[in-house]
Length: 480
Ligand SMILES: Nc1nc2c(ncn2[C@@H]2O[C@H](COP(=O)(O)OP(=O)(O)OP(=O)(O)O)[C@@H](O)[C@H]2O)c(=O)[nH]1
Ligand SMILES: [Mg+2]
Image (cartoon, rainbow, N blue to C red; front, side, top):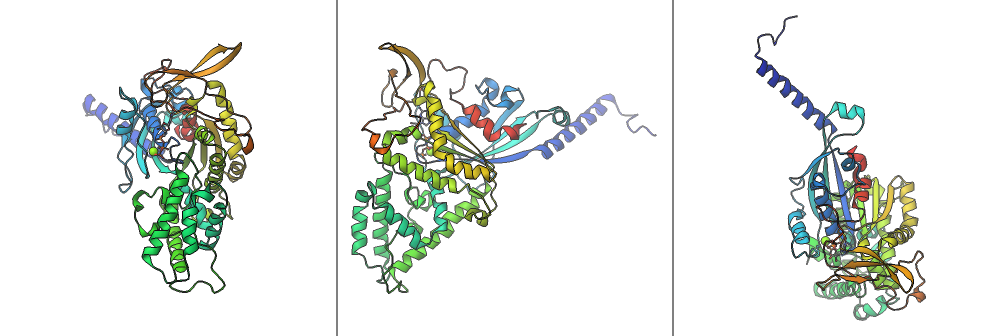
């Protein structure tokens, strides 16, 4: 056979072979690359922004000694680097990573300001695949990771899809028969009592009564009350729908025997409820929720314990409603609306650094108890579920001291609003949730902390608790 390369100078031949090799390499990368859409959610102030920011921070700095022993790709030295990429969806606000990390790690660190909308960021994680065959086939592979941070309150809209305006109104009014909703809804219910829904629809009246209902929801959401099962979700976190007529309706009592006259206020409200279902709840489901591959739900259990039995029970109700969204089955409403993709779901109790290390186990047990029933159903239907305690940014350290002859675990950190470190006994987390009558005032009083690096923190990156385990569960299989 004629030797095609006989007359080629050696350097040209080498260049050619290298080029072919790199093209083959690129082709292999292309065939082995994959994208994962990871959704980060939780009720307000559950820790979404801090989690998303520090997750990106750890991946970007993993090669500089980030402390991620539980993330196999890092521990096995297969991680080659991570970069922030151009965002794939041009109509979704970008997650402002640079701004958040600068604030968290500056000389005068501060927590992020509350966020009220969905945002997105894309990372490219380059790694060496594990296993003999894959490592021979390709020198590296890339995982494109889209992270979407969105308010968990919006997930509370999805269970509304199974309701008619009448059944949703009935359920909501029933909730208002008990405290603290009973007192907080007094003004709105008094206005309802004066209203005749059979009269012709009047825009001003609709606006007035729905504003009164929104005020009631906001009063429930006030951190001092701390209720969270508040529907519709967009009424408390409107995002880009602020001021839109879609957010002007409220539950109404059952229509009288004469029915619902055409053109009446009742009919107008019911129409707006239908539009909300279609455009907001179903819109979010189709545009975002149906495209998620992995989901982490963050829960501020310690904050809920601080707020007392009503707030805690309400958070449980919200959690159950949120979990309903993950129960995919032939009879599930969501399955009928779209084909679900989420195959891994992580529940994380955040801010574990509020308590001493010996309490983390109880925090996880409490979390597992809360999600047990719904989690069982979801995992039965093929969604892999894990629950764990974590701290995205550890701001305290555990100190064990002798006190009145007992060895007690304290936390040392800078309490919110102060500028000096203090040693505190944060108290214990019960394994079993106390009955409402056993919750004495101030039974739980977990302190919040300033974002300061504790002196025992190893490595150059922000200290954390079990972020590596969360990452391994959410992404580990995609980085093999
Ligand atoms: N000590 C400690 N506090 C944390 C941690 N993560 C969050 N926090 C606290 O929780 C608060 C809320 O955190 P964010 O990340 O802003 O919560 P979010 O869910 O994005 O809040 P919204 O945008 O308002 O819904 C912070 O201001 C901190 O006080 C953590 O790992 N450790
Ligand atoms: Mg936020």
